[in-house]
Image (tube, rainbow, N blue to C red; front, side, top):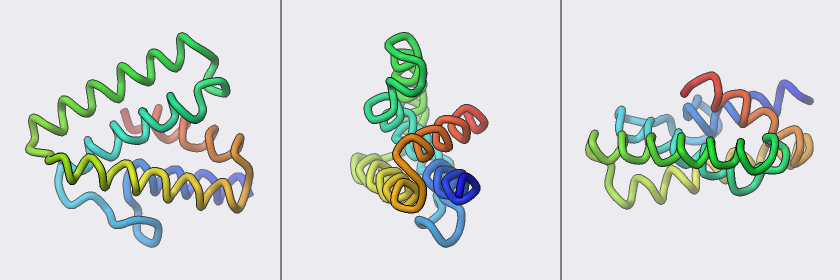
Length: 113
């Protein structure tokens, strides 16, 4: 089951086939990473190691958001990225647990940023 959680987290961050539509541009990819970091900081902060780690995740989210905007991301792209991340997370949590989904998403996010 942990593998399924990792796959879903991977989908949330990178948009692998079968989960959510993959990003069609570097701007969308950066927006997805920003959304994933924001999601993990807000919904998994306690599991990430607490306050300091949540702050570090917020910093990553802000950096990725700035990058995505500089690459041409629109407000609509940012909203869709948040929806995609939440969908992938909820799918992973449904098949594993909230904690496993958080752990998988944090691991994948750390790998791709």
